[in-house]
Length: 187
Image (cartoon, rainbow, N blue to C red; front, side, top):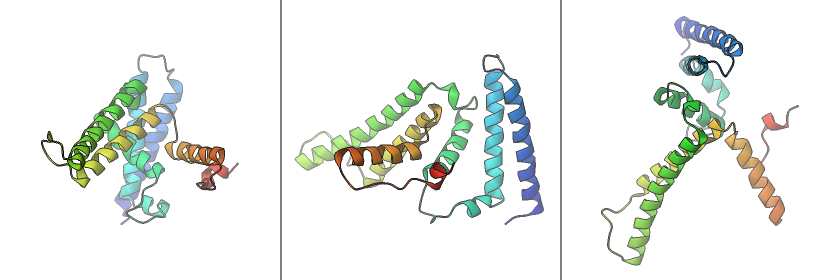
């Protein structure tokens, strides 16, 4: 529910974001203060997002069922949460660091699937029997880190997935295509 307080919080957060945007524009990336400036900017972005959620602005923007997810909404929540773990910002880890995190999660998923293969083939060696939830959790961890890697590299994961899917379908002669988003087709 929107209240005067949540609306004022939203306006304050937007004002702070504007202030930090001006600051980041005035600070050269080679300046020693840049990581601090970048952190303050990312924190201000997170505050705006939080204020929008608190003010229920996200409900007007989200035109999907509660159990659906878009790459865009995932990216916003993922980056906002990541900044809490990495206060210096996503750029405080290199793309190689993020790739290592993705690979670590893939390794955990591979280990669970290896256990499933042992069970299928009647082989000993498992310490436990992996559940479907454990497997789903590891797949979600892979997606989370993959999205952060994409953010670190400046890749719009949803757009890239659509373009690549359609490219491969066209190359191999399959009719399956993903629709381009309205955002991508506007001038």
